[in-house]
Image (cartoon, rainbow, N blue to C red):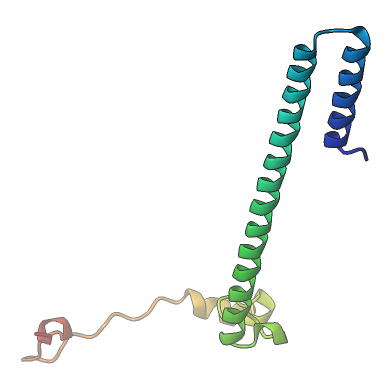
Length: 126
């Protein structure tokens, strides 16, 4: 692949030589060349800025990945193949036979009333 900046430099040189050969004014040649050089300089600066920003983003991403890895390791050996503590067990691990499904669907019995003279727990906190 051809670098656009190299092409722009080459065009600038060719333009300068062409203008000199045609005998056009020195001032115009200088203006044209200076303008082309300014464009090349701006493109180079922008490339350098973009490259620097990309490198900073990559470094930040690496730091985030390291933090995530350390957190996972501290939560229980995720890298050793253990399932994540936050994952829901797969249906095959839970067991889906009719008995366990019916137990999951059974509602909890109502809470029995408190014995006379006792306050609910929430009321006893002061």
